[in-house]
Length: 101
Image 1 (cartoon, rainbow, N blue to C red):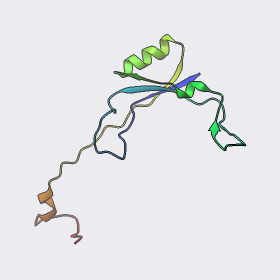
Image 2 (cartoon, rainbow, N blue to C red):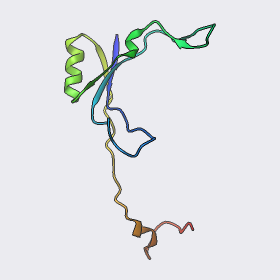
Image 3 (tube, rainbow, N blue to C red):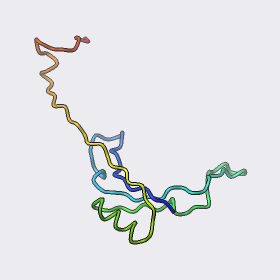
């Protein structure tokens, strides 16, 4: 049984950063998913993939995995670089980029 520990990225539908500060432990699918021939639904025999555990810190998630004998892959998120901008920069005289309107 293998798990993945990561911080979820922000959703593309919103500009906010809610629910991105927790660490999630989710199990990796070990069995191939199969399509049901009658209904066409996709399913599998591995119910562990439905389990997602949330932790406040990375250390708590790692300690849980080690305490329960779960092999894990740790995914460290990339740091977010914020480039400060102002609306007035669009109209600067010494603007570097080409004017687009």
